[in-house]
Image 1 (spheres, helix red, strand yellow):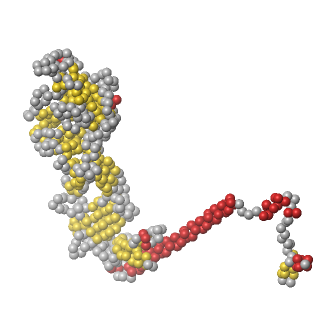
Image 2 (image 1 turned 120 degrees about the vertical axis):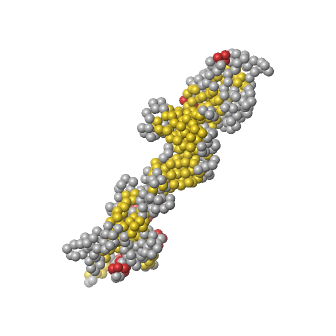
Length: 640
């Protein structure tokens, strides 16, 4: 038994033996600290150790998987790229093996038999193939290779661009590629009778545009020519070997996300184009240039003076760039949506003038002021403030002569002697005016223009037919006037947060018998209407104990920022036989939708009027204006 155990401690190696010490687990008797040894040699993995081990394994496995996927995608992408290169090289070999005169794009310059666009499949992957053949000029060198003319080509450059038919057919990392090669003729090319076109593309700042798309056609039915190419690193495209012709070459320059520029033919609507179709002369270079840049966005809203959106309003827009005398490059007529807005995308940088094309509305003004400047890749938000149309209207824009900016707080007076008419408006301000109260009380919101909210019973609003204003009531037939009376208006809605400017009433003076404070007004404003049941009427100092007694007074700024307004009129008289009279109450205000530097006179009759425009610190301007159509616009420039 002992011998068997001894033999297990040896192993046979070659012709000898080596000793292997036995692996013997210690017993509890051999451990001084028996409990510790038992735990040390008999315990398994704890839960924490298992979780940490699993996490480490997942991290390593995920890293290995990502490397595997990356390698696979790289191989897949490289395979598609190799197939695309093979397609381009095949096109080069086809061109090299055809006669030199046939090397060209069908219907292009130089003309040839190569299709401009093809769809070719290689390795089960379909590719779009675009081929450009361009005549190039290399000056005649000592080797005898080259051209002796600046308009005749010495050889041809072929550019082949290969892209995927659809992104799903190629790997996501596949990039389209463009390869080029030169093909030279067997012999020296001598001068020809052809000419050349030199086309330059630059942006709004005059910087050349690299890779701009250029399309040149001649519009011929017998020998059509189409060149589809791009500008070089200097923003030029030079086309050599162009057949001479007069005013036949149509050139269009554009770029994705950019505006388009082109030349134009003479027509009945454009007899003398600014840039006509190009003419190419024999052995001469025709140079022309075109300006394009990133397009922008115009967002248009048609609104009432209260800032409420007005739907379905037709408007016109005309750019300042022209393609001929009096022929704008851009003009359009469109309509805002049921939401009162319209967005015009892909608009060229320009200065645009807006007007209305509506049978229902007059244009009170534009914010931003006409013309609206749009910069490359810019955007502008335009508010067209409109009012219900009246038979004849005059819209006046007042500008500062030094800056050209709209001038606010300018007084604009329109007057006529026969029939008599006189009205004054202030630029940059909206207004409400009530001139009739004969409809009686009981109206909470100002909807019917001849009604009001309430009175204390001592007000007479029908002294004659038709009503002429607010007066004190008499006590019985032939009686005396009440000593005082109070009328509270309906609620006026400016439509949005407002700055209140002036309070005006007429007449401005009263009979001496009624005293100097016979007419007193107070104002109450609120940001809310439906929740306002108690109106706090205040005077000019913001307290309830004061009143506006000047017939043309500035409104206290404590009301600014509110939207809704009511006024109350207090009439007083010490005379039993005399009463004060109020024929008109008006207040002016300003909102974000109030057109800057602009006013609108409505309800005019045809005829000649005197227009007087003045402002503090400026020379008064007086001019005659004829009204004979439904809407007339005038611009007045005031000189400091």
